[in-house]
Length: 221
Image (cartoon, rainbow, N blue to C red; front, top):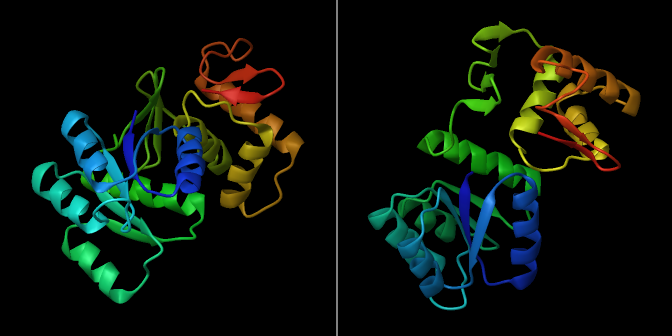
C-alpha cells in the first residue's frame, strides 16, 4: 500500500483529507510541524509527502529541502500560498508538484498518482488475483491470457484496483463511470457492467471472489 505523510497544521484539513485519502486506498500518517515531520521521516518509510508551507514550527521549505537531500521522496506542496515566489521556491527545492488550496480532492489524487508514476514509487502493474493490468498500455490479462474489456468495463476494473479493500457504494461507482463515459450511466447500467466484468475476470461469476458484494453497502475488491 502507498504510504503518504501529510504535513499540515490545520486540524480540519488533516481530518478530512486523511479520511478521503484512506477511502482512495492510501495509508496516511500525519505531522503538524517541521520537527514532527522530520522525526517521522527518520523513523518510517513513505512513498510521498504532502506538505504545507506554513507549519506550526518551521516551514515546508525546510522540510522539502531535508526530504530531497536525505530521502529523495516525492513531495507535493499543498498550500494557500499561490504567489509566484512560493511556487518557484518550492520547485527549486525539488518539489515534484504544487497544488493550491482550496483544491478538488479528486484532482489531488490524480496529481498524487501522476507523481508516483513518474518517480516509480507506485507499481506500474496493478493486480487482483490472477488478473493483471498495465495502465500505461491499457492491457489486461487473466492467467497470462489477454482480456478484452469495453471502455466502461476497463474503467470499472481500474476503480476497484485503485480502491482495494475499500467498500465502494453504487453512487460512488456511478460517479466514477460518469466522469469517463461522458454519457448517462444509470443504476441499471451499473448492474449490467458489474455482471459483465465479473463474467470476464472471475473463475466462477456466480460466486465472485475478486469483486465481492457487500450487502446494503456496495462492492469491494
